[in-house]
Structure formats: C-alpha cells, structure tokens
Length: 254
Image (cartoon, rainbow, N blue to C red):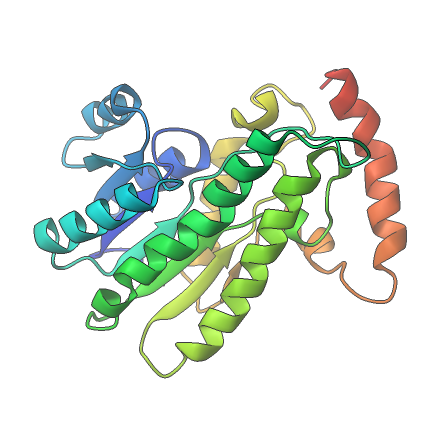
C-alpha cells in the first residue's frame, strides 16, 4: 500500500488500534478522516492531530452507514482508502445460554457493518488510483479464543469474506488487505495493562512497515504462528491455546 498522499477513512478511529493507525498515517502526509460513535472521543483525537477530520458513525446502524458514505463521497471526493477497523469484543458463554443482545451487537458491528460500509463505497473506490479496502480482523480468526467465541467467529467470517472480495476485485485496481493483529494492549477486554499483550506502539510501528509492502495480509511477527494454524493439526493448537488463555481471562488476572 502507498503510505502517503492518500485520503483515508478509518472506522473505530477514536481509540486503540484505530486511533494509533490513524495518527501514524496522518504523520505520513495522508488526509485522514476518523469515525466512531462518540463525538467527544473523536474531537479529542482531532484536537491532538491538527488537519485530521472526523465523522460520527455507528457501523451497526444501516441508516448511519448510508448517510456517512454519501457524506464522504461528497466532502472527500479523493477518498481512495477505506480501513474497516471498528469492532467490539466481549466475553460470552458458548457452553451455555448466549446473551442475545451481545450476539446481535457483536455480529452486526464486527461483520455486517464493515460489509455494508464497503458496499456503499466500493463503486467510488473503483474510480480512484491506489485504492485500498482494508479490514482489521484478528489472529482469533484462525485460532478462536473460547471465552470470546462470538467475537472470534465474526473475525473468521470477515477473513472468509476478504478472500472472496479480493478475488472479485482483482481486475478492478482496488486492493483488498487484511490486518490481523495479535493480542495488543488496548481497551478491548481491558487489555491496556496486560503484560502478555503486544505494546500498541510496537504493533503500529511493525504494522506500518508491513503495510508499505505489496502483501495482502498485514501480519506482525507475533501473529504469524497463529495465522499458520489452519490445517490438519489445528485442533491441538486451538485446544492448547485455550487451555492456557481461558483461565487467565476468566480470572481477570492479566
């Protein structure tokens, strides 16, 4: 991906990976527009990064997606990069009764929302040079974390969709990228102080280096072993991973 001179729209840009990625791209000389549900949070990011812009967007709301997509095309006609980063991660109980609100919110925010937003912008992106559609998935798309089974499943579904969309757009000039982070120190699952998680600044630095190559999957070194998991031996790794991580997450001792 070209790392400068773009007009970039990033969802979930008010905090965590989204904010850090937006700021890194802003420093590279891109026109960056961030989106999120909370105006105050967006205003804080924009104030800290003069020249950045923002728009309130709830990716779980179809009307909000439609309105913002139209606004972006009108206000930023040079828009050529879409980064679908917004997501929520909450613990669930795949071995018991699932909370229906959690189920619907997670699936709509993490999976349906990015598909709707991309569909609303893809014809515009086809007309632009160096166009990119990127999705933030997770290594949990490849090695599901049992206490967050719904979240993991949404990321696996998004990975599958990316493969199809990349194939269908291969002659269009629009590149389709997947960013699959490992465990990173953010507010997701209260991981900001988790010693086992990758520091956010280190993740962004390595991600930016990989993003600037011609790869379709943006993986830091910490993510590669889990990305390589699918195959005939995947059950052993999944079971071992969850035997290690489930007690830690359920105790909150991280």
